[in-house]
Image (tube, rainbow, N blue to C red; front, side, top):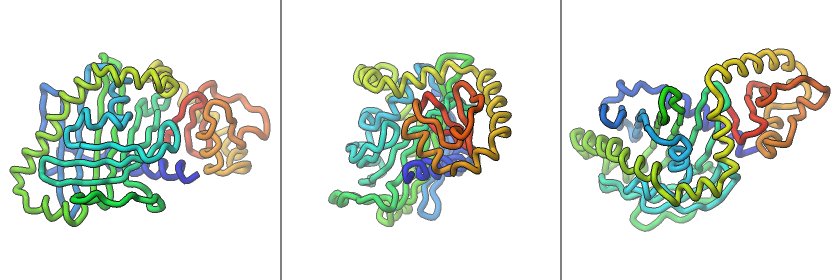
Length: 314
């Protein structure tokens, strides 16, 4: 239950960040060659960042290069260590992330990494979130010479580009810096921050693309985690028209079943049961009598569930 409610809150928070006006951020830029736009803001101890990048290689490899967190040092030179502390399930885990930035800051953060596969939903996207560990998580001692940010929240939204091979990654982040890191950042001139931001965003694209498109270890990892990525292949087969038609069916079905659903189970029970055994379990709210269910998706209490994937779309 705790995991489901944590991921739900994370997804809701991400919607606000994804709606940020990139051009409204005080430090921003575009690179037509990289097909990238980015923005950066530093204010009141917070860093807010956003980028939109179009890539021209395989969607699954792009998602996997971000999702498989132990590869982070291969795509970001500022990440010097990724250590898995706990696996909640195949799409949710706890990590220690150690960074040494080009601005001279050093951080040792404990973060959740959660994946939501929404390819078969109207969003037509996969969501990946990296965010500070919840308050009841036992944290390891801080590494010597490092700070720990008060709060980290970063999200990526991967959307396939059907007009051409490739995908779009919308990335947004908000970090409440520790007092030590904030003091260091506050004395850096704006022109240096602009140079840093440009290097951080634009400089990371070639290395990410090279690793994601060509890494053999990444290809082996995708094969090892075949169940997860094969479900994304199924989702990629859905066209926007198919999703729209299925969504209409779902809305009609939801209307017919809403009263029965609300009277026989809680939303929390439905989330828990569906996520625990997504391919086999039928939510209690659908078991009191036989109904004609949509063939692939089930919507209940405002939530959209896939009977053949591990995602929840809110």
